Image (tube, rainbow, N blue to C red):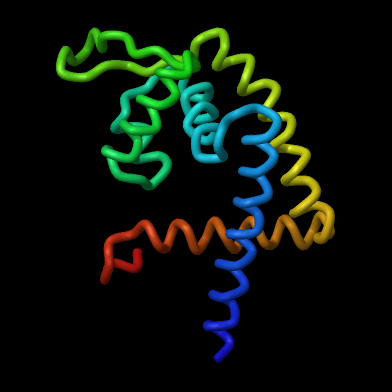
Length: 147
């Protein structure tokens, strides 16, 4: 069945891509792909709550909290009191975190270029990106509610 082949190709490609990114980031920068994803999100938001990280990355709050704890121990982020809600804290990059985002971000872009832009033409990559965005949006809608 075609759908199973698409699923298999999608999952296998994602695994190969993730592993290639992770290997490079761990070797050159001592950060995981997941850790860099968290740092990139915090950089984009400037400051955010652990809940916001979990929501944006589609992971559990517990998983986001563990990632934040790990990055905080490494000196890449800091938690500050949330002035709008004393029950939560805001997470921000440290200078070391900003430097890591800049350097590891370039390596990430190089790897993505190699694995995505290398094999695909610009128009094919644009179509692929649009199809993935459509599938991701559809997957995030409540079941039984196609609109």
